[in-house]
Image 1 (spheres, rainbow over the protein chains, first blue to last red):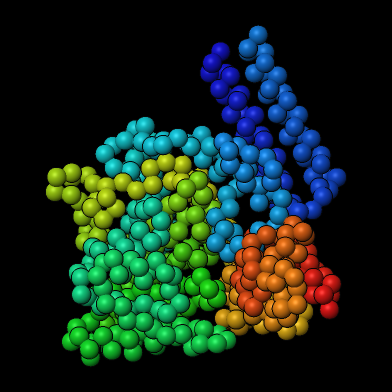
Image 2 (cartoon, rainbow over the protein chains, first blue to last red):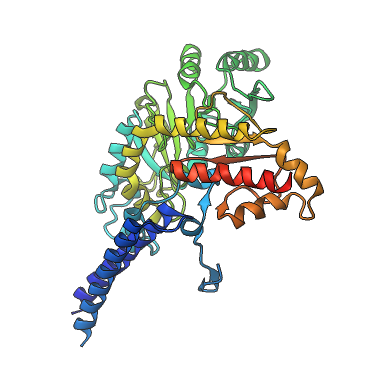
Length: 58
Length: 381
């Protein structure tokens, strides 16, 4: 269980770094429609990973 | 930013602003590097499989990485240092003795001077051409070497050239300096803190015996500080000599240097760096466009090489200084006006002259910066 939780914790952190990268590359402008879509995909990945962690902790 | 972590303000400069700070632009890390650095953030994280010295570690593959870096720089050997300054001092300490002479350019970074002082060297400088170009002419090195010879009866022990300087972003013809050093048979150290990692460098072609690099300045490697010392084969043994007592520990870097996430950052960024140097021509084109647009605003003059050959650009800016004289915030007005427009990196209080870097900014961002400077001028005219 621990190994899976650790792996998924890094996966979630890494996905958030991808979101951070999007913010860095586009500063200081508002995100375009395409960029918002990209951000949503990252968030979905983070949520899925967090759910997987939650599942392991039950 | 109001958010804090561990009692410190969260730094979100790259996420919220366009950062023009020349010190920082080449050290901004891509996402993959931040991920790697994050997992190696603990002290001595590179040393899980220590083999006695950092540069020989196989897991993570530091030894293989350094071999590739040496080839990338057109040199025969490369070793990690804590920074470019430590690499310069290591060379000076290894191949000179106190009282020897060193020749360096007047545009040198202060650390070149301080390293030479620490090594007890007599410093001879190659002057720049002065305002407004401040160029270092390679021929000046021959004159300076002759001066050392005339005054001391001996050749200098080392010649140092700042490939691209930190004030004007001038790019010096290193190959010409290398040829002069070769003619005099004086070892040649090329300080590439602002060039390698940004633009292609081949030390062998430039006739350099030593190439010193800054990971955190130009190789997209933060997470601490890290440098590289690359050496040609003739002088490797002289500089990388080991301790008598601790056979595996190179004396000049005190055995091991950057033992943690900064080394990992350097390694993780290397694929990114190898790719980005291929696009150096585009960076120069952007810098020239930006410089021309700034001068077109009126009463602004770009200093240094013209046309410019680097992303680090210094401007004399009477247009902003005139406003500062009448503004209640004096010289701070420009910094604050830029900050309001989400532009950071121009030093607070500077209006007579300032430097900035256009490195890896998009055309949209560069246009926005020009429009912002224009907007500020119009606001106060």
